Length: 224
Image 1: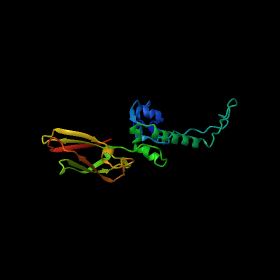
Image 2: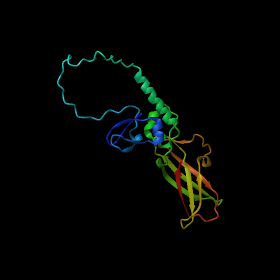
Image 3: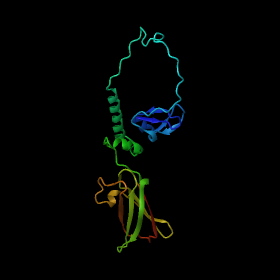
Image 4: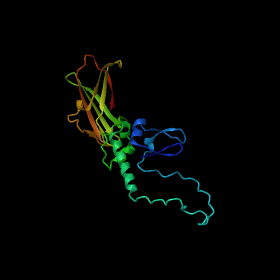
């Protein structure tokens, strides 16, 4: 895989192991800067930046400098199959990246788009920042408990797993009287392989048992 320094545009070759150890923070030996390699990660070498054309050189006679000196061996022509080997190695590295990765690398949009046609075994995409809460309410029930409901829209370009809901109940003074984390298996009937598709809106629903103190408000967070 390849990346490019955004400061000096120098190109570097990276391996999956380097990305995993450094968490994608790469050092550029040309300008001594650090940068996120995932921002310009590519499976192929990038085109070199444009440079000023070299000044024209005066032609030399073929007899001035022979192409092969008597004591030199002719350069062997590379096998036409070497490109296939290079591409195969790159594809193998991408597959390993999707399998032996950190969470940040597997969530990278570039990595996922490269792996989509290859069907790499990446873990489910998870980014709570791309879950938009459209509406939420905490309703009292006749049983003196409460019903919490929230409409959530997945604004990511990829399907996401259902999030963990961190619900905090407060008194009328804004003080927390109870808090609990609800995982998908706590509020879904069939949590296995349950995903929120891109641009889909789902309702999250929780039944809250009665509390010993009066509930005057609430806050909640969606997390992974």
